[in-house]
Image 1 (cartoon, rainbow, N blue to C red):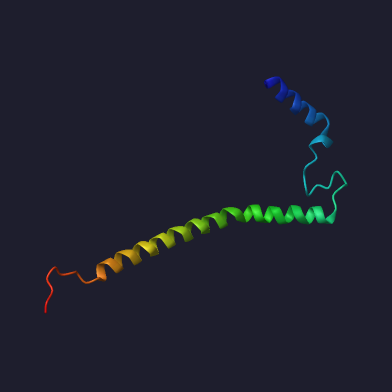
Image 2: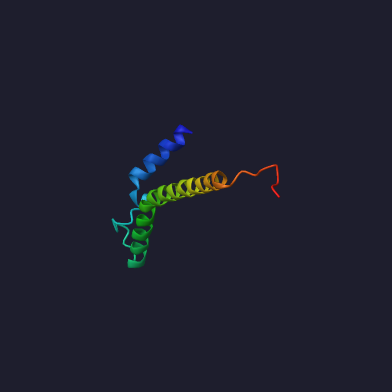
Length: 87
């Protein structure tokens, strides 16, 4: 397995056009404006994803807290039921 990894590293180092994946280098010359725009959009989305996930977790915890408070206070505010009935 190490031999295959070593061969891949040597191959990528000696033949760089195989590993041509940089969206901003434009080294391959085959990138259109639409491709560059899509790279920028997905980069922005992936950069904001941790903040979106953190906000979702915060919102979920806040919602759970509100539901627990609502349940607690609604049970605490109910009048105790009496076993005897007054006529």
